[in-house]
Image (tube, rainbow, N blue to C red; front, side, top):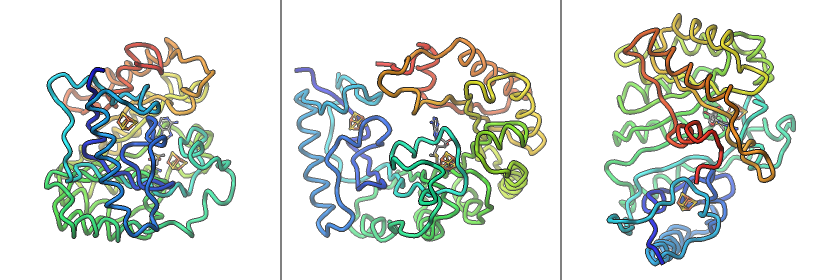
Length: 333
Ligand SMILES: C[S@@+](CC[C@H](N)C(=O)[O-])C[C@H]1O[C@@H](n2cnc3c(N)ncnc32)[C@H](O)[C@@H]1O
Ligand code: SF4
Ligand code: SF4
């Protein structure tokens, strides 16, 4: 059997709401055996199980949930190596949020309706800071490690300041995803401490009306105000603040809204634009996997427009979304 390779399985640990996983769960990682937060031996088990998975991949034996994953490759000349130092630490252990984007991928994870008050209740979130400290104590974090805070909404997370102080102290870069509704000073601290750190905020609109339709809270102006603050506070490298626009069928999929989005962002001083598409609910089995020409065109329009405004602007994209757009399909394998 052909030997396989997955960079995530070699180097990632994902603190997920359902347990501790080997990789990003978006692409099927949830199928892997997970480790329980309350198991004292979770790390030994994690490392042993991962070793078995890696040895199997080398022999070409791949769990079925990896089959369609974008990260699964033929090994060619880069066989998987067992590296016990984590290069990617993902914090995805809560879904609670202070808004209710109708597209939110977390609805699939919790099976909770986004309008369910539990989705917004902040109590009962496991604190993962002690787990991160434990990794460090056991010398399991690579010097070149990168952290990411996904969630849920990070500004509601109690241990957020502890995690940020930790990454600053150890000079690890971090990707922070936030909806921008609340201002959090530790976000600016993290960005200023490491120029390789990024903040991503999904504005998805150029007007309050559209924002409200998508996020189901009337907080467009708060996000604009907070974006201004983050840009001001990172003025040495305001490129670290990325603003995302997820193109959503029938809601914001028109040039008028996109142009207004660029006006608002340019006014704030944003220089890093992140066009994206809705790719979680759209790939459900049984749904048409084709991406419409209109969405593909608008995606390209955003990339061109960002550079037209200023050739020095940055366009950030997901590799797999680029492939999806190229293939006009959500299924890219
Ligand atoms: C689940 S959110 C959590 C972080 C934060 N609350 C936020 O919205 O940025 C993580 C990222 O996934 C994106 N996202 C959520 N649902 C998505 C979907 N169905 N398709 C594409 N991107 C999605 C969000 O825009 C955000 O950038
Ligand atoms: S191939 Fe995908 S699902 Fe499988 S371990 Fe790698 S990232 Fe996870
Ligand atoms: S802000 Fe983020 S976590 Fe909250 S509902 Fe929207 S996508 Fe989901």
